[in-house]
Length: 488
Image 1 (cartoon, rainbow, N blue to C red):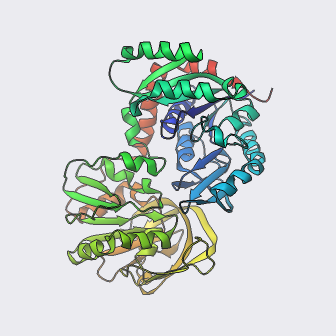
Image 2: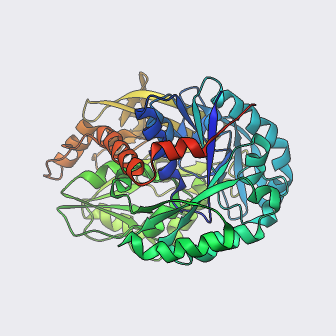
Image 3: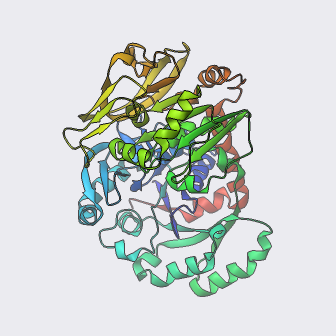
């Protein structure tokens, strides 16, 4: 029989994704067939599963932690925000439609069948399934029809571990408050709680544990400090961008404008390990730095809308000045589309304006197509002649004179474009910076020796380090004793 355990948070960004990934690797290292599952995710950081279709990058990472292929059934419902009020809805890897927030609340009960079907598929043949919730079960206004937290846990009969983030403050009130407002059936599913992101002497929180126990009766399953290795893992969503602190000045500054609907920004994580690279995420209201050697325009879930916002921020003028100074520009996916002459959306697929003038750095034009391209790919850098591996998730088709100089070759076909002077380039390929040889070739153009760190190997080592920490702090036996058999 399969055992299962769900991790829910007292709020968003309490560290559930990393904990599930770490416990997945811990169980895998103990020889168990372990699988991740997240009923509903909201993120524009998507991955292409090995069986085709989109899932959250977090579940892709957790599958990597389990050492198994990623499946669309590990994240059956993925919401990709396109505006302040609406999202694209992806169900079992394929686009289901678009919904505004209020409409989605009505839609959720219809999606529970897909969630339970996917959970059964993931659990089939597994020894253990570790489930990640979304948001918080304390959002009782969303409880009717819930598929992300207690609605799933009670339907599937899966016990819950509540995770509180002590770093943000108020963790005692968060845990006790969750206990207070949950209905009896939901409260009964909680087997205990974890305190995450602790700094300093853990014994100083002994009275806090006693207080929580007195109010709730729940056992504390562990107090987990900041896991240093977590910084080497890909970030789940744009919430992480709000917490990034700029590091010291280095030989090469790479600037990345934070678009309002930025997507797949973990493309740039490999640069964090480069000793001579300073990675700067430029937030709204800030200027693109004058001393950047390279500006990378990232992917976007809403290209035309983000193009308009790019201009509102004044980044178009900054980018032109950067180009005049001889700076390099790379566009990835939606960023590649923005660098062209125009972007057309005749079918209204993005839900807003249907035509926009591009930034004009590449002689290409883009038209959004109804059929979405979603695939893992093997590729080649046409510029550096090195092998690449990555994935595509996009709606548009781009054509123009600069496409005669492709940036990459994906599965044997030319992709992307390069300007005549070679200073501006773009591609639909996500993940190209993961290639250590590609990064080394790119950085050498700035007089930097890079690519010495094997990014993917380092991610794998980080998972092992987190697993070892969790085994010491919580314990494999406690994890297994807290989980429960499902399908009885």
